[in-house]
Length: 127
Image 1 (cartoon, rainbow, N blue to C red):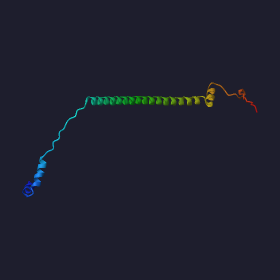
Image 2 (spheres, rainbow, N blue to C red; image 1 turned 45 degrees about the horizontal axis):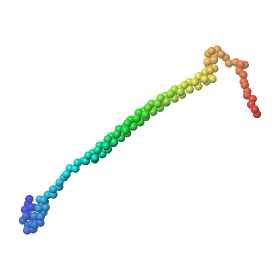
Image 3 (cartoon, helix red, strand yellow; image 1 turned 90 degrees about the vertical axis):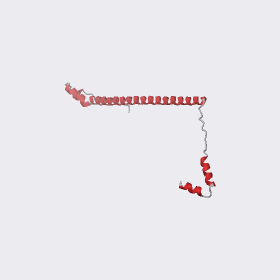
Image 4 (cartoon, helix red, strand yellow; image 1 turned 180 degrees about the vertical axis):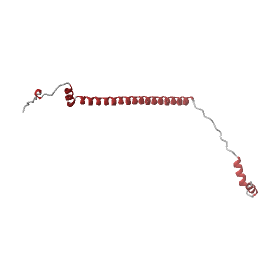
């Protein structure tokens, strides 16, 4: 306030009056709300529907892919299990068909190895 009184007391009051008149004058702006036309509303609504349909389609595709991936994983685990069983059975067949086991079983049944009953066959090929 003291500054304002000092400025009013100065002889150059014209510049102060101009500054005050500028500050007193207010600029008024008129705002107008613009509505959306019917055609624009239809376009926006159609665009939103298309985006929604596309999102649903993408999510549906991702769910199908997830289900297929889990089915693939289940089938692969079943295959691994079956391969393990096949390997065990092959090992068992190899063990059961070994010469030592057959000789042992023959001994249990009372069979003896008689070399006079063994015949050696030689193959004569073209020379």
